[in-house]
Picture 1 (cartoon, rainbow, N blue to C red):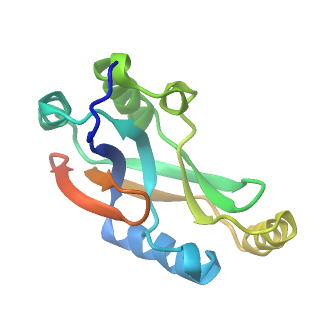
Picture 2: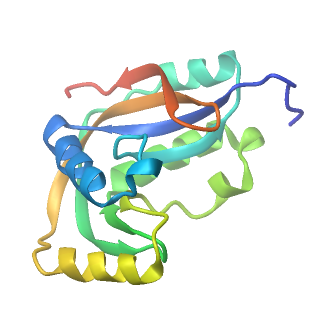
Length: 170
């Protein structure tokens, strides 16, 4: 893959139902360092997709019903905390997209897909451990719903919304 000089970096995230999004946003607002928290809570599908018509064609052709995902546990990230997500449907969607973009994926996006939603990051390991212990006291597995995908432009800071792809029967 030869990269264009002024190519745009696209990030693809999963769109959550309103209730789940509000839940994760509230945790992120409370626990993420404010000077670094310029994004809403999100589940990243791909960190870098190619700048071109192929990206929009692939995403526009995805036919997918909205689906439930299981929020199964908390995950220690070293410098933060995330909620682990499990869903066979999500894994299949990621595999399908990965195959469509195989020639353009960066090494990070070729790794095993371990979906999660980060609510704290870029803190000391001690602060992350403390939050993990705090959240673990009341954690009960629950369900969140995937209702679409969102494509973002990354310019080194806050993401700029580009386009949404809503799943059927959302």
